[in-house]
Length: 114
Image (cartoon, rainbow, N blue to C red; front, side):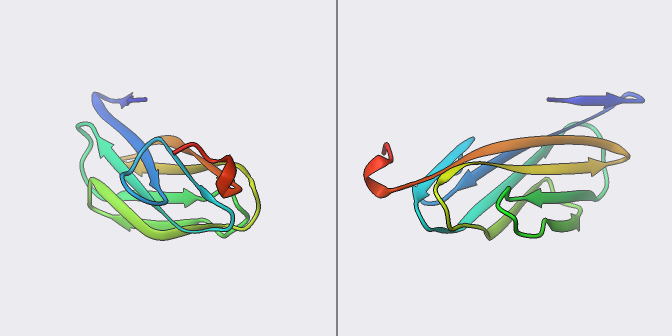
């Protein structure tokens, strides 16, 4: 969702991957270790982006401040139990805040759809 404040726009899009390409959803067999997250910003707002990544698995959130439009966090998340998780990124640029989620499915290998 694009947020507009004072004529400036900003939006964030979160993608995840366990193997292969980044997408809005990722899946893998339990235990799923080393899930990667990618945050992609867009809009007219400029300057550093304050990123906060939350894997939704009990791990401490990952906080990064960088002046980049695409931020990859490799091996960001580990999931030791089966379930559906919602990884989340909250980002702020020029005082504008937006957030997005990616669905993570962790299951027995025989239960996954490839």
